[in-house]
Amino acid sequence: MTLDTVSTNKSHGGVQGVYRHQSRATGTEMTFSVFVPPHADGAKLPVIWYLSGLTCTHANVTDKGEFRKACAELGLIFVAPDTSPRGEGVPDDPDGAYDFGLGAGFYVNATQEPFARNYRMRDYIENELPEILAGNFPADMARQGITGHSMGGHGALTIALRNPERFRSTSAFAPIVAPTQCPWGEKALGGYLGDDRAAWKEYDACALIKNGARLADLLIDQGDADTNLETQLKTDLLRQACASAGMQATIRMQPGYDHSYLFVSTFMADHLRWHADRLG
Image: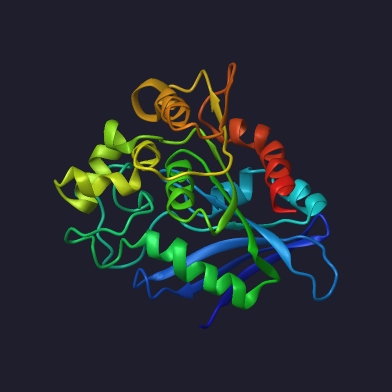
């Protein structure tokens, strides 16, 4: 597969790159970023996947996430995909809303028209992009962790719960933990998957845990000043699901923090250290 380099910059002794390719999963051109820390020739490095939230591209965390210093110190590759397909002819929310369509792929494989052709972010993240990473970067695919923010936290949790053999570590910042029970999720899952709510459950972390999916460990940070907490994020539902299942989870409420990248960047290094401890 042809991989075009959009840009590369040296940072903390490593290389921050942005890359573009034609995706077979989405049928569109896709852009993603990868930070490769300094390393010895021939070394294979553990990988952290970071999934972004509503309205975001790869650029939000790349520009504002403050991850490179910690990744350089810990020897972690950091991968940031886009949040949806884009380009001419890709369907969007007919009303131009921010919470559906472009920038709001919710990491699902859509089944409803006109979205089914392009909105296949589950296939893209679970299958296609890992193949590209393994073929073009010094990635140890036996040592992968995943994290994300908001909608991307939802993506990280559900992808890890469906693929526990792939990910040694999972964390999230202010994730949407039960999209079948919140306005953002109901709009997105209904629009992409249709009215059969049973089909939604494989994209709901709390439902997956209730149905038997498990992770060895989990780290969540959530700001208690986040205006989305009660209506959209519903962190307590994840706490209850983990407790009922006997699944280990560290869920931290951070006093005074909101939903912004100022919150994410504050705790980014802590999450990366937590992942590094589990990736070896």
